[in-house]
Each structure stands twice: as structure tokens, then as C-alpha cells.
Length: 476
Image (cartoon, rainbow, N blue to C red; front, side, top):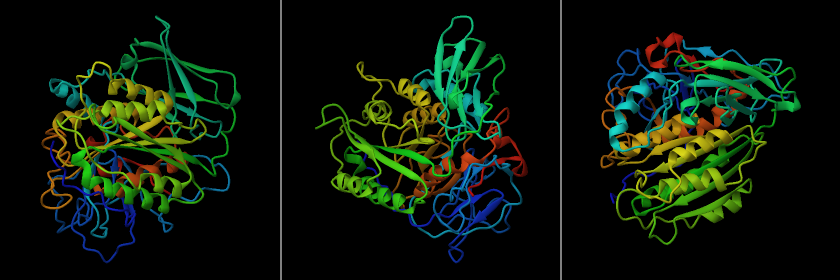
């Protein structure tokens, strides 16, 4: 198996940029370019001036036009401070003229791509990727199930049951902090005429009938009462890590990253963190778990001895790691958000007859309201990249990848846009990988105050819009 050359650096600076507004604490650092992507616009070390700024040096791909959601840090440099009491959702910003920003030169350069913000683009990509031997997961006829309270706030951790009126086949989804869950009816074997029902907040069931003959849409379920207090939100975060031999350099970086991420979080946010490491059949073990805990010292002690060994052929048992994380970790139903970060440099073994297929785990994650953000480390091949994008898209996460040379001259890149990501992916957001990861945690809390009906990529891909028309969710 290839020996990976990247090292995940510690979280040094949380400078995050939005297409329409930026807060930076590294004003004196060099600034030469920024790239925007389908799901987020964040800053990349050494590439900070966005599209349209005269004299800017571009990051690896020359065209930088895509953007949907974004994060801007305030002076607290952690998660946004919670408000004293629940409030109606703030309007989601649209982008203004891009501004030049700067970040410190630190960490691994990585890209991010959100396939739900560019849904039609993804449908074209994944159709062509079927020849790579990946699972055939039908994600057509997408619907956003949006649960809101009497004030228009999104209701997190709300179970929504969808029923096919013809066959009575059902599927259950759980909303994220935004109050949204994503339904792919064909993935659950459903037809065109459906009903959605929820009885959150101890209310009588609210039911809406809808049709999915057209390609995309949103279904609103309005509750007549206020949601529960979210002024002190809780989050569950699980890292799923390939610990085979080729990941030896990543392991040390991840250990440092975990400590630093936890140290940066706002004390007003209650967070539990866990970890699942996986290898492959024939190794000393296939999976090992570290339970979700708020005891950071205990977790740090547990993972201090992590080491990379084993493996053999290139594919590893990704299916086992993902299945254990989704099904065996004790995710809290009371958390406003549940996030998993799958970090690996090799595709899954797709020929194990006794494994839980990654598509099955992705559906289960959607049922539990777990967003899976995938991170393709250096050297990930096209098949692995396609699998990772499928998992992220189905669960409402995004896909990240180390850029060629992003960890130094020898790093091969985990998802270069003209290879692993597909020929059309020459625009994407970029930044320090650690910044991209921590921004996902920020965004989950921020979305508690965003309008749940303002949805990036709904009915039109964000990469087809002008910058001023793109949907931006900005951390407060």
C-alpha cells in the first residue's frame, strides 16, 4: 500500500472567509489567492485573495467561481456565543463584493466540495462514476424535509417519517441543527406520491402530502409551538480514522488536531467527542472504539497511543469503520447535531460478502441525523473519492481532500479536481484542513439561527449563480 506523505497539522488559526464578508486575525500574513466551492468558502494558507481581486495569484485550479455556504469567525475565535434565549432565524446573507483576506501559512492545504449545494452537477458526476465499481445508490428526486416551530426556527433532532402512499413503505429521518433532513426517496425504494409526518415537541402529528415527480424541492412541516431552548447546544463529534501503515504520518497530526479542536471550542457548547479506528481483515483488529465523552483529558490519554500499522493491499475495511461509528457509538438523541469525520487514504474493500455496505451505513446515518464529512488523504484513488462523495452527499455532509502538494512537495493529493473529483471540478473552496473541519462544527451551531428554508443548492446549483446570488450562512 502507498505510504501517505501528508501530516495533519494542529489547528493554529481559525481564520474563515465568506464570499461576502471575512473576519481574519492574521492580517500581516502573506496573501495571494482564494478558491470558492460548492458548499463552503474558507481560506487556504498562502491563497487568500478571492476571485476578482486584482493581482491575485490563483490556488492550484485557475478558475474560482463556486460558493454556497460560508463561515466567518468573530473575535471569540471559537464557536459562536450562544444567545440567552431562542430567537427567530436570521436572514441568510447573500454575497457582496469579495474582499481580500490573509491567513497564516500553517497546516495542510485542502479543498472542500459540497455535492448537495451542486446537486445537478453531482448527478452527472455519479452517473459517470458507476464504471468504477461503486454501489448504485439512486439519489434522484431529492427533497429537503424542513421542520420549523411557530417562530420559523428550525427544529433539530426531530424525527420525520416518510410513507409511500401506494406501497406503505416507510423511512425515518432525523433533522440536523438546521431543522432539515434530506430525503432521497429512490434510495429507500419509494415512488412519487409520499406523505411526511412528525410529532416533535410533544405535538399531535403534523402531516404533509407531496409528490416527487420533479427533480428537487423542499417540504415544510410547521409546528404550532416554540422549539426547546438551544442557548446551550450540545454536539456529538466522532472521528473515523484509517490506522493502517500508510497513515503513519497522519496519526500524529490527528492526535494533535483533536486536542487543539477541543481547546478552541466555546465553553457554552456542550460537546462530546469519540473516535473509531479501523484497519483491515487479517490485521491485529479491524475496528477499535473510543466512546463519546466530554472528558477531554480521558479521551486524550486513550488516543495518545494511537499508531499506524497493518494493511497490505490498497483497499481497507472502510465499511467496518463506518458501520461501527454509525451503529455502535452511543449518539445522543438530545444533541442538536451529530457529526462524523471519516479520514482515510484508501478506498473500501468492496468484495467482502459479510460487511455492511457503505451505502447501508449512509442511509442509517441519515436516519439518525448524523452528517458524515469525508476527508480523502493523500493518494486516494478515483474509486475512493467517488465512494466518499456518495457517503457525504447522502448524509448531508461535504467532501474534503488534500491538494496536490498541499502537505509539501512530495504529497500526491487526495482529490485533485481533474482526477479524483472529476473533470468539471476545477473550482472548490480551500483552506487549512483543520480549519475546514472545525468550520463544520461552527456551522452546525450557527445553523440554529439561520432560516431553515434558505437552502444552498435548492432547485439550482450554487456554482451556476453569480457571487452576489449565492446563499451564505455566516457564523455569528
